[in-house]
Amino acid sequence: MAKCRKCRKRADIFIPHHKLPLCKEDFSSWFENYLERTIKKYKMFSKKEKILIAISGGKDSLVLWKALNNLGYNTEGIIIDLGIEDFSILSLRIAENFAEEANKPLHILSLEKEIGLTIPRLKNRTKKYCSLCGSIKRYFLNKFARKNNYDVLVTGHNLDDEASSLLGNTINWHLKYLARKFPVLPSSNGFVRKAKPLCRFTAFEIKEYAKIMKIKYLEERCPLSPQATRLVYADLMDELEQKMPGTKLRFYSDYLKKVYPIFHEKMEEFMEKPLTNCEECGEPSVSSPCFICKLKKEYKSD
Ligand code: FES
Ligand code: ZN
Image 1 (spheres, rainbow, N blue to C red):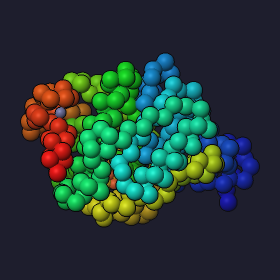
Image 2: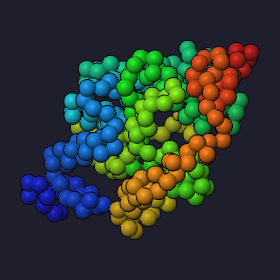
Image 3: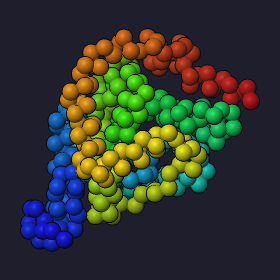
């Protein structure tokens, strides 16, 4: 094994796309420094601002929470209980244990309490439950963050997520998504500012940081999520990365630098429907009543 680039002791970890061998200690400082540089580069948030982190119980969100705390950011967590039996029970327990150890507040929202619905019940009614689940989470996270005056809502999306969804959106020319694919989105029309501070970290680097920091996280994926096409793009990106280390980061960073500004300028043109406010709940939506208010009614009449 090579020597650590920083201290010249034996290296424990090699980061291929940065061509960087590091020992454990220097790896965790590199991780936190690079995170801070990413936050500053994209002007995501400052140490004075109130940050709400969307927690799932998986490695990404908990690593992000830990690293932001180590850097001295003002954080709180939120988790949504989706009612997916053991999976939800376990993720909640893991998130609660983490919050207790970190001595940080964790807010818990229950889908059952909010709209009388769980994801397994939704699955019995519609094939689109998985993408609906994503929209439901975004709705409640945004609403909670705005109503409670957080400056920013952050999520644990990593480079693997971002590069593979960029590939999917490019292959299908989903212009409206491409026009909004940026590590930070400013607040507008009832949406709070959103940021993805881990967007330049691979899943491998995140797992290594979790190991060093001894973070307990849920390794299983959601048992209900089907073998999505998204995973096909993720596998393709992995193959490219293996053959040409650095591809993921280059593909994503060059998109942000060279292509995003062009698409972003035309964002309004790409939106299929203009944004309005739901006349029942008041939340920003492309239809009124919004999809959440429709779901609520549908399930009440069950
Ligand atoms: Fe939403 Fe699995 S987490 S369907
Ligand atoms: Zn509504």
